Amino acid sequence: MNKQDLIEFVHGKMGGTKVAAEEIVSGMFDAIVSSMKKGNEVSIAGFGIFSVKPRAARMARNPKTGEQVKVAATKVPKFRAAKGLKDAVK
Image 1 (cartoon, rainbow, N blue to C red):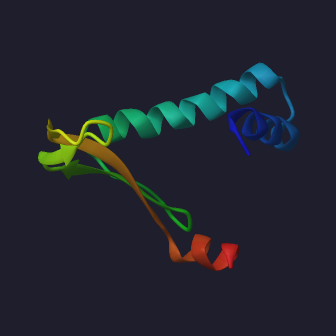
Image 2 (cartoon, rainbow, N blue to C red):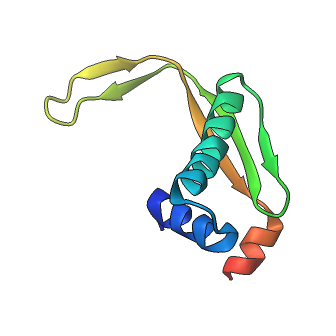
């Protein structure tokens, strides 16, 4: 399932126009991303928790040349599935 499939699903559930369904889906994703940019967690009961995890700087190896390369510290998105989602997928 991709974003367009989600838009179709929302459109089928709520009716209205596809443009309105696309605004709803895009708005949800934008809200999650903007909250995570601020460093906040987004918790959706029964689904999971979206959070931001810091990744420390490290040394890596270029697989082509074997040369050591320094990788800068960064932040990465993380998702922890809720028990309800895990049980539903089993």
